Length: 308
Image 1 (spheres, rainbow, N blue to C red):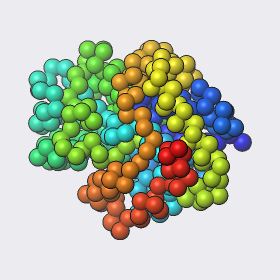
Image 2: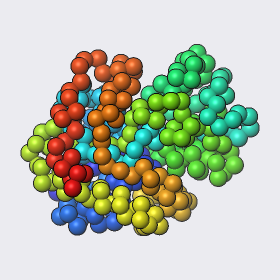
Image 3: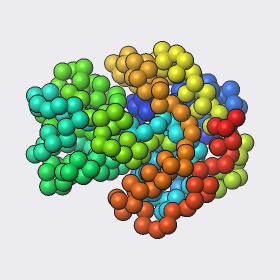
Image 4: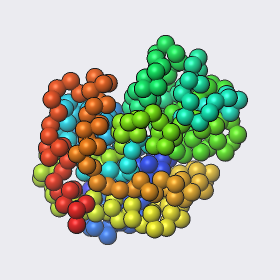
């Protein structure tokens, strides 16, 4: 039976090393038969992991705490890319300098559960109240099976259903290229100090899976690392990996977006990164107990692969 890998958005450059690991044959080269499947929202993906309906998850790392309290029961196997990887796009008619979050006052901003955590915290860091100064909520049409949140949000912006959205790089690019949106914040480049470290996309397993199948875990981590290296070396290979999952228009954009994200394709999770995520999760109320130590959260098997 193939390994089942759940991700909350298939049409995303930030989870793309995992998609590429499967579709470009890096998993096969490691002796693994693996598939990726959509589980939206991110809490559903982590519940699938906890319940055994998925073997691995690729998703925002802090969202594991929705399901695995204090990190108990899960293991982090590596970063799919570094840093908070979402983009804030607003209606092109809204006048604001890049990075100026004050422009959000009075606006309707679409954000999926999970990613919305990062937006709310970033807004608070800028001195705004995410509940009183704006309306942050779901994007119409994102509830169905097989829906890309970011691409659907771009269409909702174009239709006037929202004034802006917080989503992955693909959704942002679609909105900007259509002429309906303009980029206000790239969280890794324009966010308030410290916000880029709130979360990152990670590969996650249960602690039991990590303990009982170390060879499989190491093989999957090697496959993701190989995919990251291949995408950094030649982003054009991304198009072939996108073929089974991406609509034609987004398929044509993926190589360019991967080239932009490639400098962040590094699997290592460092202690200070986990500390930053813990602080963020504590502010959200997702982490209410003493967290496990780094060595008990980040897989030793995975660390050996990164360190070679």
